[in-house]
Image (cartoon, rainbow, N blue to C red; front, side, top):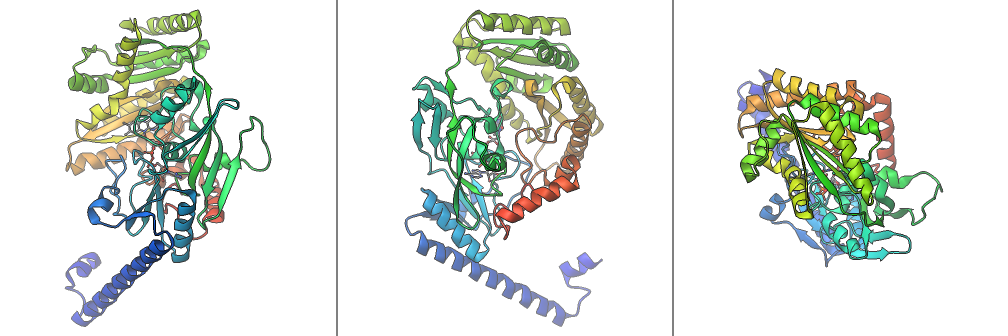
Length: 490
Ligand SMILES: Cc1cc2nc3c(=O)[nH]c(=O)nc-3n(C[C@H](O)[C@H](O)[C@H](O)COP(=O)(O)OP(=O)(O)OC[C@H]3O[C@@H](n4cnc5c(N)ncnc54)[C@H](O)[C@@H]3O)c2cc1C
């Protein structure tokens, strides 16, 4: 009743409605004037910096890849080219109390770099230089806008290897990878982004610039601030430089695909492989729906009668790679695999790998795709897979599951037709039940995409009120005005 009265004005005297409207209009005008002053000040202190204020430009920075999340339109988009410019932006934002959204390539899947109405988006894409490759200490020093694949290429020319490889590696940035603590296909052997970050240069909310860590293999001087910033999704500071751990180039990979008649069989094969002690560098899963989506798109001749496939790779040196795949093969056979294909050369291996990399885009072709990111201890993968199937069926939502089975991290992806709000609601309920199921298995509601904006209301479910309270205290200590990516993570 009250909501209706406010919309129509029917239940309020005309004079009250007029007064309220005047206050609202005056408030909005005042707010616009404040924003304009902020932008004028920013132009004055950083005259060389590109600042996009045109609506079409701002619109192109509204979203990340979280299709089901409805973000705001940025006030403006700043494209700094140096640490000093980033510091100037944050000093000015602090002086005006203007919120700031740090952004890399915008490929995130939790709404972390999506726009906020009235906030300045700071896109780090123009800070895209590899500053140094230090062969002696096996580190690379990079700016945050470097694309992951470009870094891999640059260090490969020096016979070195940068391990973290999200499936989006061809278009996501190192700054975004650090912001989300990105995982990827070879994390099962080489760890996640956090394991590759040695040191950071970070601009704090008030414009101070700090350095964490260093090039030392061992360094325990004070709290580990590096690890605090990795995965903080732009809520504690803006990363302007990173020193990253490199490895010697691993030997070429041996690659196989195994098809299974049931999801459970694939899950059991993963659990057996993990128990056996082999160290594949890739152990990925795709279910029936995802196999069909990829095959429909690229007509690859995949076994569509299979309920699941596993992609397994080993980059162990010499004959050990063959031995590892032999162990993987017997784990798959023992679990009831219906067929196993081994790549005979590098091109074929690349083709098999591509099957997995196409998974999300293939699901997106079916409708609005809400990719979830749950995890469980690896021994409980069969139970997690069963829970996903049960929950999707109970809520009557189409779901394709794929992901990093070797890490215990899966991406059940709910799909619905655009505009079908009923199914969207059911997908939301299914996601919430999924989080509870993963947590009950001792797992997590997000393995690598982050809490961001899309999962914030569920953080306490996993971590508990006291732990979230500690997170809020850290946030308040580093960003007392709350201008950095407000409403994200905590
Ligand atoms: C097809 C596809 C496949 C994907 N596969 C994977 C995968 O295998 N593994 C995985 O982990 N993710 C995956 N992702 C998700 C996404 O690519 C990663 O989260 C990636 O790390 C985001 O990088 P970005 O440069 O696009 O960052 P953005 O999306 O722009 O930002 C991500 C977060 O980091 C923050 N941020 C960005 N730059 C900085 C900075 N300089 N300082 C501080 N904070 C910053 C942002 O505020 C935001 O919260 C996939 C996405 C797609 C579309």
